[in-house]
Image (cartoon, rainbow, N blue to C red; front, side, top):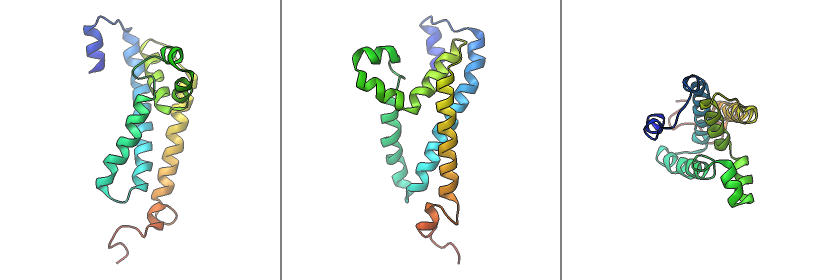
Length: 145
């Protein structure tokens, strides 16, 4: 949808950029999914999961380069710039932004891939019935009967 709106504002994106953005979007989606999966292992009730995700996703979004480019953030505040650089969502945005313009950002790709793998491994370990947080909490009610 964003790309359709960008066309209305006469932002020209190379045709190859659309193709190159697809893997970047998929990897970014996997990263956010892995973070969500890990956080879901820590939340006991389903009702609390949405509020926990809001306290994670919204700060990640607002403290990223999704709304303003990194160079503009750096002009405004060096502290906010450093926070943005530590935010994996910033690197996901930069990965997609560079891919759309037929460019590759190796640092952002490394951060997004590393974050995806780290949180996926943490989620797998957390959901492991013998060792994870589910086992420490006693598992789901009625399990083992």
